[in-house]
Length: 157
Image: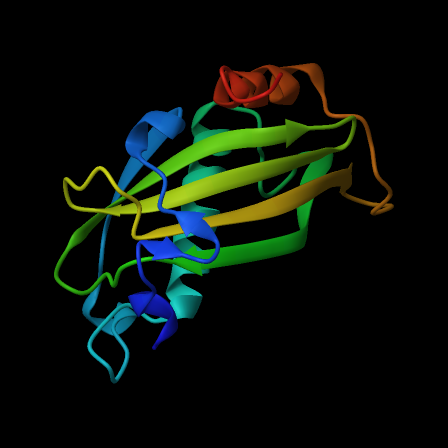
């Protein structure tokens, strides 16, 4: 079975619903996203993950990708696939924060096909926030922490 065609009741557990997420971004698939098997290639899912996280942070004014003193480096990522996505289709990326540390955050992202309530894929990645120049971990700046806490409401205990 291909990674995009895993059962909704896979060994990793059932696909998550939209209600588990705090922020949503529609993403239109592109012709080039499909692979030879006729569905979105697995590496593209990671691009969708990056897109929803970074767009949220930029729109909230807490990430300056060109000159900000603090940047997030991905130190871990993963994805589980439950159903295929394909061009042409609108994918809705759901975003939440599952863990918020002093200098790190674990984002969880689900990709929903069109208007489906069950995720076609569920992934995560961990950012460690570092000083842009030294690349040493730093405490999350207050505005960034506030924006991340909004994504964690109802998730963190």
